[in-house]
Image (tube, rainbow, N blue to C red; front, side):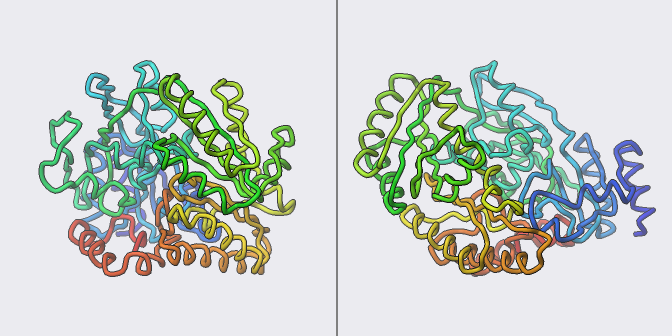
Length: 466
């Protein structure tokens, strides 16, 4: 199909005001947060902004009839080129479709469209005393559709789990235009084991199996109190053991974060007033729940940490908790301070390893960065082994970019060697697809068979995951 014919077909379905086809505007859809997207130009032929399931269905049927690639897109805050049209075609921009259709408080669930921003949902739920627990760092940007597609999580996954554990059902438009509802067409139950679990099939599929148009998600009661323990360690190897000691004591924090020495230094350069103490590692434990229980658990954690940490602080005072969190909250922005002429790039930033190999992974990343002369800052969700690495380079230096690629490849391979995964929460997309066979073996063929069964023409977000 000629581009002009394609554009006219989209205009007939969604209208001229919700069709983007000018070259300058299309370039805006060729980026996400990944470094790889800045090195390529993955431009669509046309962008549609649908506002109904019927419109999505009509677009998918037209695309299927003409074998045109379709890429669903949310806020574009991802870091893997997952929402980019690597083979051109149609981009479905679902971000403005942001209706919270219903808060069913008695049944602890919400019905929402895919463009709802995460933080907006939780702000809305506050009046009901409820919240949606997964908490990605991009909470003020990322959309629910993107979270479902990538099975997102965040700092509090250690206690509350990841997105898939909260998705009760989905409305999905399949590649040929057929509309299906998973989890029961009229179901409002919180438990359902009827039939093959199609909901879980689409969660984390990164837009390769269909377009998510409505989400039925579970919400939880909002905790009444929160406390924070911060511990400094002179030896990095002591930090993972301290986390395991807390778990063995029967305490499950809502978050357990780590900053290595590079992250501590970056934070102090960026915000000297925070004044983090010099250490090989700092652990941050967050507890939430009712006031009495977190006071007891906080004192227990502080007592356990004192056995191996060089310094420990525990507080439930809201202002002090906010101040203690600052060091962790600014580290992503602070990382570039370690290289004055550098830029933080998103690449090799999301491995996850077994808890008892976290220290090994951090030391391995440091060795890779030193070997290839690339500045690296490591931090992350040590509570579930999810390590984030901020790599700092001069993007205009070809030699430095080449060395960066070697570090990124080494980080991904290190994760697999340590019995981990190349991505704990950001997804595969295009960036990590080359590692799928090494990580999954023959299971990749099963994934491809499912993909081919639902999308025989291969039009749904092609080039991703595999």
